[in-house]
Image 1 (cartoon, rainbow, N blue to C red):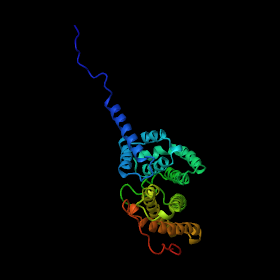
Image 2: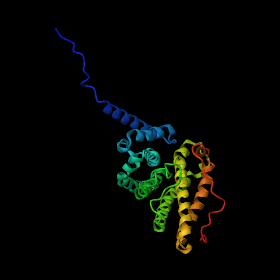
Image 3: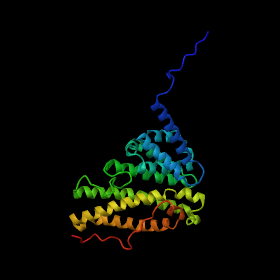
Image 4: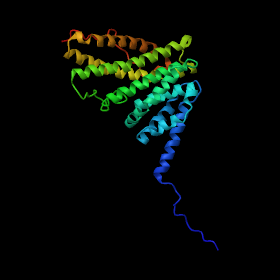
Amino acid sequence: MSINVPSLGLNKKPTLQLEREKLEKDQAEAIAKATSPIETAVKEKHIRSAIIGTWQEKGASIFWACLGRMPLPSQVIMCWKAMFLVHKLLREGHPAALQESFKYRQLLKDMEQFWQHSPKGGYGVLISYYLKVLIAKIDFHQKNSFIPGTLKSTTGGDIQYPSTSNDDYFQLAVELFDYMDTLIDLEKKIFATLDRFRSNSQIQAVQCRICPFPVIIQECSGLYAISLDLMHRLHAGLPDELLAAHRERFYQQYKDLKTFYFDAGNMAYVKALCVVPSLSETPPVFAKMR
């Protein structure tokens, strides 16, 4: 006669393991949907799910593992969307996700070299330019860990600099300008590929190309605010002639941003997703402030 022995749950997986497996499954699904190979814009709900996953994990190991299993070198649309998703991760993901992403810099560099020489349908060169942006952002935050990925203070106030040295302000401004240049180069390259569809952001293929514009605008806005503050500090403490090169770079970026904000601000798709800043009619005056 057989005896039915009640299960003691010995074969059940630990709760933490089950939660981890569910998180991995959810992340994989969100990333797969966000990076579909169809030439359409990335849906915000899929981006949000992928980013929330980094806060649940308190890191980005699952995120990067999911990307590593994707056929990015052979799928241009998928790769383009993946770069946009990585940008959102570095900006809005859990703070530890930004730190963990530093170790993937070489991977991004290798991809940049690959796409630079393998442009396909216009997206190949765009991907290589986007990878330059991601590498520049990683380099910037690795050198300046006191600045969050959002480029804004977590307390809602001003960025607190670890040093008040003019030398440090000078170098930080250079690093800000360098990162800003990659963002401006990317948006210019995207606009250059839009051709006659440039102003019609309701076309799915156009939305796919311009989907990074809102995050580029947010990044540029944050960088501009910090660089403006630094320029005021530098001109209050150093002779004007020592800052001529800084002024030249600042004013060129000011000019480029005004053009970018105007062009992007005329796109319904962009306006629906972010607030497009407006810069003053004339650039700030720094010389002879002392």
